[in-house]
Length: 357
Image 1 (spheres, helix red, strand yellow):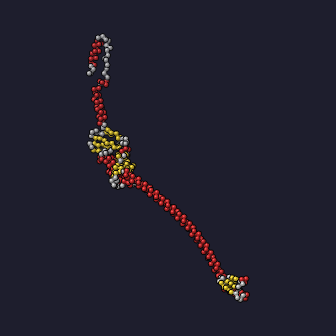
Image 2 (cartoon, helix red, strand yellow):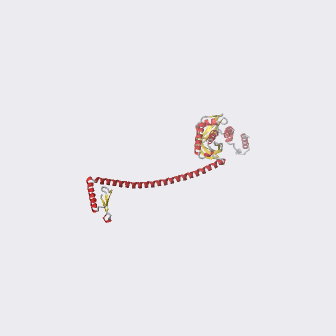
Image 3 (cartoon, one colour):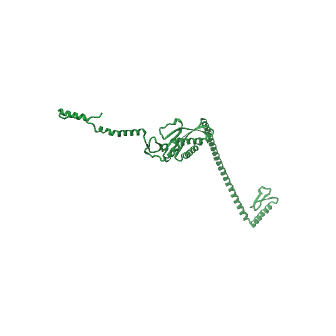
């Protein structure tokens, strides 16, 4: 109820006329704010309404570093992304989708290992596939990827907000089934490096192709190949057999080396004996050659005159033997340049042997 100031003025005048000395004061004075409240109330209400609208509809978005925003107006996406910062939009008519451009991690592993509060890490169950004979196997792997800021608008417009499942996740499953389906389960442990290389190369190629270069896979790491129990038992048996075969090959190789060593030793000894025999033979040959040379020198020294003198000397001794014993038996035997003469006188004391050389 408005305060009637005229009422207080009349009371004051009446009181003054009544002999109170004119000192009466009104009970209180109206503040200046309330005197002008009617004029400012409309502006205050407008501010409160604006704050309420901002609080309810929130027509702005804050994009942080490592993110971009895509503004959609009546369902149509803008071609230029919103960079980090503060951006307004019109509620109901427009909306902004915030996309993380940092590196993300997509894991495939057994369910008991799944669990992460980091939104950049998405966990999925291990991938179940069939080998070339239809045996079930599963693989655990991790995929690191990111989306390029310039490619976000086109990717979101083509694949929608669930672009990760439609591009990366789907291709990983397709490639895994294709690659592992070309092997028998029991050879996979030995072919692990080949499988990992094929997964890495094909996943990168196909993700780049499907996203038209907007999504880049940085790495694909094969963690584990889980085989059926029967296959594991077979592989263990094969490994044991291979180890035994390797041991046998080692023993054979060792025996072969020992045999070669003994053979080499025997060959060395035989060679030594041969060299020794050859040495002795060479000595004999040298001695024979020397003797031959000596005989040659002797033969060359026997001139015709010397031979005649030797014959004369032998003839003289022959005649002397006959004079002493006419009944003696004389034997001539070869003796080199001159013959050997044997005289049998029937008297041993008179036997003589003449040896002329």
